[in-house]
Length: 261
Image (cartoon, rainbow, N blue to C red):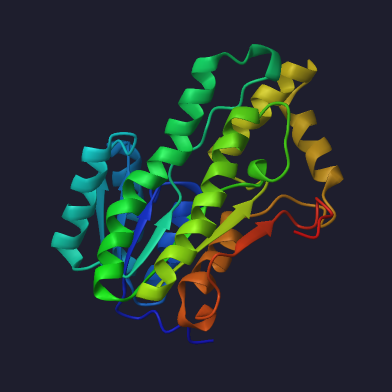
């Protein structure tokens, strides 16, 4: 299937690891020019080394909790590859904290880590897309915003806020030619997942391996998702094949939560 993405400039936040890196790899395979934004220079250089042979790719390091740094990264990306046609927000993840260890600061930190890291990039980019009359945004959020878990309440609240922002901004910017959607992955084989399993293991007083085994046992598909599987959905939503999909929140939990909406 031709996704009609060739030649587009795609900005991927959180693009140096995990789902973001998988997205970057697939966009390059479609003939896109890809700008990555990440916080760690070490992770960024590793990602660029792995991707350079696949096409036009550039990296920009920034702390996206700082709106000025986020804007600087957006400006640098557009200076390198031109106006951003597709924005994929995959940066940020709130630290998992057992409910009885939560303090008010944890809730603040969760909003900074996930909600504001997305908004600080989304705000300037969507306004520029709207001024040009075209653009696509896909926010990688998380099932924690739809299904509450006791080790991810603060992060889940940030995810829920981001889902609402996705739907509302899609309605607001649709008349100006901008589509905005979100995908909600559940367990995905990334470094962040390992960190989450470690918290669960401490809460349950068991091993991390046992936590993973029990998690896999509960999944209807019998396994944890791969980053490439999430990336495939992101690319479709970003493409012209999804030209009438906007304001959608796609749950990707392999039917682990039996829900209608």
